[in-house]
Image (cartoon, rainbow, N blue to C red; front, side, top):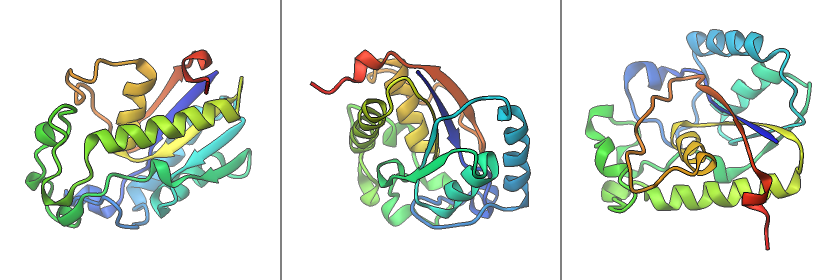
Length: 185
């Protein structure tokens, strides 16, 4: 089984360095171009189903990437991190090290706890893998859930540096998954 993780294309909030969180923004022209470029790269890759966050930027990204080639399903468990009072504010107010420290589980300003993101992403992955055995799955989501799912699928030590790689707009990664790791018992 293969799971391909994709972060949505660029929005004006991304371009302007504004924290987006649950804000429901469309892709900008750059974001649409990024998606078209990625579509060309994924053209020969087979997908059985596509799961996406219900926010418009991920829906728009998924439609550009796969059109009507495969069934699409929205799932709120892979929605972006709730940034609480920081939504719509400049990015420099967000302390990445504190908010991504799994043990600290920091939630100042009403920002969703990192352990909660991992929990909902783990629940989502377990559901999707059990529902779609031996299928190739495309997941279109946001920076925080994509990062969390990457670490879950790669079985990363959550006490380490969870920020050890960059997830740009239209980030794409395909991971071979051992389904037995996610079998519901």
